[in-house]
Length: 342
Image 1 (spheres, rainbow, N blue to C red):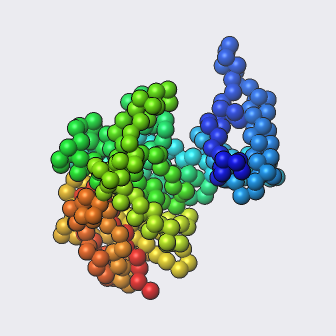
Image 2 (image 1 turned 180 degrees about the vertical axis):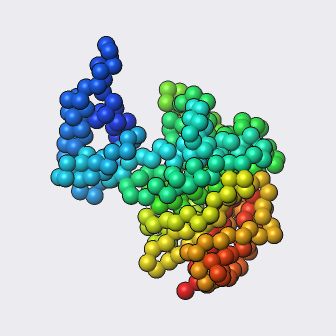
Image 3 (image 1 turned 30 degrees about the vertical axis):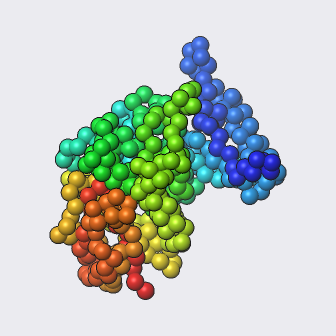
């Protein structure tokens, strides 16, 4: 770990070790094997923490077992965080049918105007805190699973990425990353997403499909890269966006809008996001008691021209809220962030 400067480890499919073990002959559950798997994982995390106490340990775990992220001393598996696959499935959902998931980016990519189940995604967003790693793309979902593709490809249903089609694709990519980074979870993204990588991320023929990430930063992916860099820096500079506190204020499936609040004891932020194909230029009314009385300043817009957007937003204005109501311009396939004035 010291030689290679390893910050942490991600353990693949821990659920197979502590939950999924069965006898192949007849499918009988093997509780004792699952118990041994849990013991192995517990000893692994305990040992690594002894060697390097500050190490970050993540589990790709698809159970809802709370003990995955409890300390090994308390009988848990000792991981710091668990991958939150439901977040990805609700937000992007580009592999498999999964009728119970929203698949927002994939469904929007068909280019139609039907309602999106924003309320499905809101549940995943609300549950993203408390030792969860959130992501909008992973190595499994970027070309290794059946039907899976890179986000920018999924965002326009495999259409050629030229002209207006690329404009829509990048806007939806910005929204996907924004929902991850502005969630109460620990955000993660797959390399290449920051420049709009298009090729499948393959496990067995990676070299044949690799893309020029450095060149993409100065070339076609430069504006998306600028967005990633700016939003990451923005989140790092704002403690209120790194807390685990979130309140969903508004969901509208037909309008494809979700509005939520992020906060800590010193800061309050309002995030209004839309996958509607047209901006709400005349303003969008939001009503919720938590808005209270006060004023909100727009501090980030995913649709800014410097990111390749159309500049539909509130132009950094200070917008009043009164009686639990506020009216905001929300861009097409984008989001705005407002901070409550002191």
